[in-house]
Image (cartoon, rainbow, N blue to C red; front, side, top):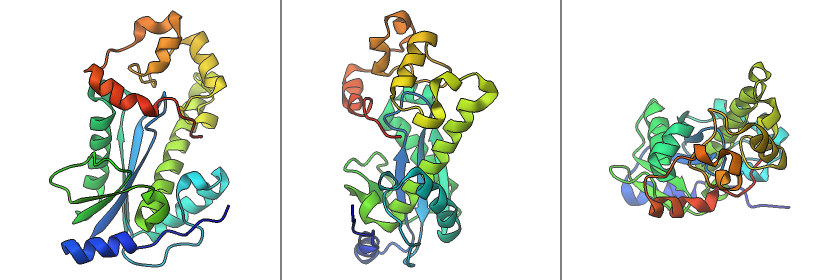
Length: 236
């Protein structure tokens, strides 16, 4: 399906309205997974023409993402990745974990951005950062699209390595599902229970009577309700 390529429109607007000279695009991957970290990439691109075919990582095939990621890593002015572990997600809740991962990514950049374009409608960064949220920013904004591809490829590779590590977790097929829900993943959970890499506060444990005793109670029912919407999606 044809799609409009991303542009620098939002970045130009931020520069004009806030005086920002360095603008970072930020995107996350792993929010709705059952296992593995949530990963955030911050990318600074300037106003240069992007590599051909750049768009939201979800619109690209796995092969095309793998081909494009190293090109983007060389093309961007700077990029950095930040992660929040399954334990941090369980302890803090997803919103705070996202902020932690994003801060780690932004602080990993060689220069501090004057402003941030954040994919989505919720600002999970907050002060003191100047944030512009953009719904489907990973499709419309060049820097966010670049961040989305780099983050997705890195996390997928990390989960594949985890799945093949010593053969201990091959039953979970992390290389195919990246820790997201899938029939194979669910079957392995029913048989073996969660690994140290699973999120123990997630609702999937409610459907696994044998392992429900391992579920970690969220810090508040309100926070759990706010975050439950992303737990059931498929994103391979």
